[in-house]
Amino acid sequence: MNLKSLANLLGMSKTTVSRALNGYPEVNGHTRERVLKAAKEAGYQANPMARGLAMGRTNVFGIIYPPLPADLGDPMFLDVVSGMSEALEKIKRNLIIAPVSPQNEQASYVQVVRDRRVDGLVVGRTLVHDERIAFLSKVRFPFVAHGRTRIDAPYAWFDYDNAAGIRMAVECLLAHGHRRIAMISAPLELNFACQRSESFLAAMSDVGLAIDPRYLVADTLDRRSGHHAMLQLLACSPRPSAVIVDNHLSGVGAVRALLDAGIDIGKDMSVIVWGSMNDTLAGSNVTTIDQPNPHKAGARMVEMLLALTNGAAPETLQELWQPVLQPGATVGRCID
Image (cartoon, rainbow, N blue to C red; front, side, top):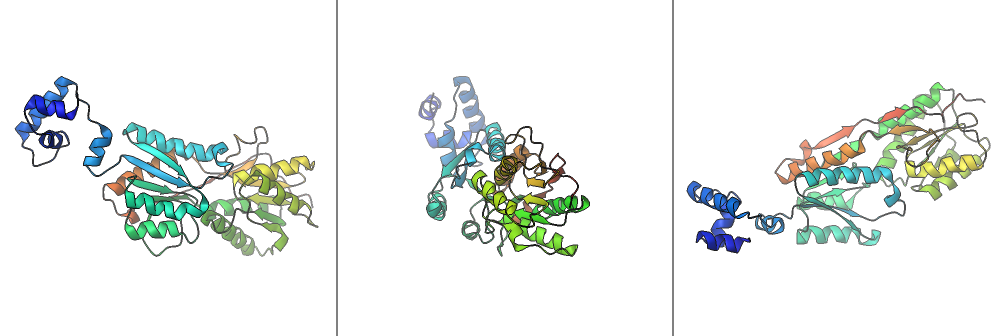
């Protein structure tokens, strides 16, 4: 039975029946009870899309994403998205991921907001200076940034403590006698990479250690570039005794390069990678800076989006979760 049939059965207008079903206060209690009773007896099910449009909502949240080749095989990314989807399914809402080309990303945000195609957005891979977040903040469209940015406006964000995680890694390596420590970074215009790089430089400076410029290799965000970056470090003389990789996708390539070169990881060279490696390098037992509960993180971002769409102030929705250093077999005493 559809809305029109239910209205005919009751001898009421479709507008009155719709308003009664959706709890509008101008419908009196007797009419509402009569409509709800008839709907239940007739087995009426509201069309969720039509109901959402009537209330000015789509019941859909979105992610606009210029995908990298490795993204669909990235277990961490998929775990976060799975957490979002599961949380939305419980409340009968949906998540869409809209892949776009990098050059069309900003225009896609403008179009989605203009046409009100979703109720809110999750903005990933935040930049140090992020035009997407500046735009969404200006037009007051509900969004949660998965990561932070530098902007003079209140906005909702969820992130892990990048500075604390890298400092833990440096302190671990220093405790094992390492002084020639290198870092492989993602592109530094990405906010997480910038924060992790700044933390590395500060932690080394705090103990009076100068860094050979050759030991800082950036612009790596996949296996191939991580592999190439590690080969660069192996070619240095003297080469570093330890390396921190600031993202797990590059970490896969970096560890592979060491294995291919016959390096005894944890003895000849120590390695710490940011992000879980369990699903990408099974058996390697890599020491990692882990981001706990990515599935719960995805669900939490959905909760924050729901709060925003219900009128919560963005500045009250800012969460910084702490990373954890997971010991493995790839860190050992410095031998020289």
